[in-house]
Amino acid sequence: MEFEFWWLLALPVFFGMGWIAARIDIKSLLSESRSLPSSYFKGLNFLLKEQPDRAIESFLQVAKENPQTVELQFALGSLFRRRGEVDRAIRMHQDLVNRDDLPADQRRDASFELAQDYFKAGLLDHAEQVLEGMTRAGDATPEVHRHLLDIYIQEKDWAKAVEAAKKLEVSAKRNYQREIANYYCELAITEDVHGRGEAAQAHLARALEANRKCVRANLLRGEWLARQGEHAAAIEAWKAIEQQDAAYFGLAAEGMVESYKALGRLGEGLALLRGLQHRYPGLDLLNVVYQVTAEHEGDEAAWRLVRDEVRRNPTLVGLDRLIDAELVRAPAERRQDLQLMKDLVHSHAQALAVYLCASCGFKARQFFWQCPACGGWETFPPRRTAEFDTAGRHLARMQIGQ
Image (cartoon, rainbow, N blue to C red; front, side, top):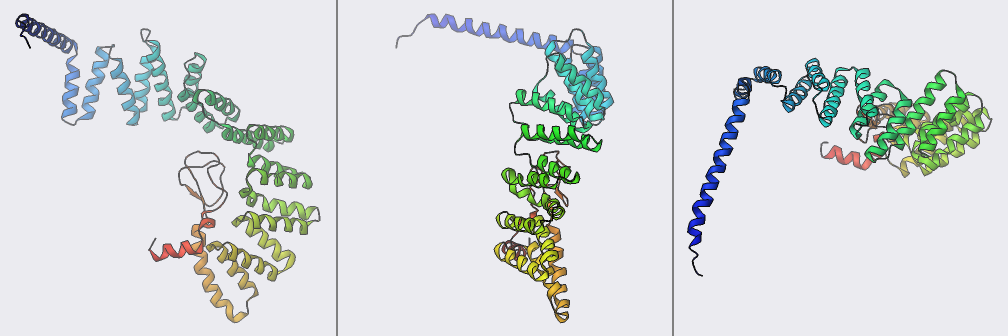
């Protein structure tokens, strides 16, 4: 390879250009550092000394002396909100919103931060006003719609919640039909409380239009029809649950029994519920079938029913119910021992007989359509945890000390 002598000339030139560029960068850095207020460096110093409160005060001074430090003001506002100093966060973000020279994207961000401040402070009406203003201005994002929806739910403004959820479906590209159906059910309950039956039924129809598998709508429809004395129509509404989710029959069982009694067709109703229990076993349904069988056909028939169920689906709760049936028919000399067994099994069965939120794990003795902990809709399966706990699994857990 031949050596090119012009490279000897090029190397010093490249070196000189690099030196000049470095000098320019250093001068630029020094110029920028001189333009920063001394409070900025004091704040950094306080952070290094782990004195966050004094650092915040220094940075606030920077924000006052240099209005162009927009990002610093955003950071301070968010920090105040996380620390619980919501009033200071509101003032910081309000100042940003009121600035005439703020670019549109930063004004939108400042408005959203301000809405979050109001929300954190519990000023839902102020947060709603800011977010709705963003929506009217065309600045709505999925997060804006989501926060509006949360506000409407907390305010129990279900009509607005429906509209917000529909907008969120478009912006977030997610299906909210299950939630929308429940909002319509809440509207129906409100109308029913105020004695407006036709409006309540219309909302239930909308709930089923939004989500044809909305069990809650048919449960409410059956309950209200039975209350009006339309027992045959109520039974048909409850029967429709089988096409939606048969696991919910336990929640309708008591109402179905009362309607069949009112029609003088208890035997027909009992046969129907037994068939449902055989196809879709559940604790709530079993309890109703057991009680009705004992009243209608006697304790011996009720005992056979529970015995067969425990053999087919062995659970601790089923065993608890079987001991109940045994106590009723047992001779006096055996009842003390059976009662001892009953007390032992019942305490364990009761601890397991809870509903469990599939989203957050919250446990409850009663059934909820909306989880009190995470706010999810229909996150509680209609079967208690004990129904999934077979006798074999329970004994295995006891053996390993769980």
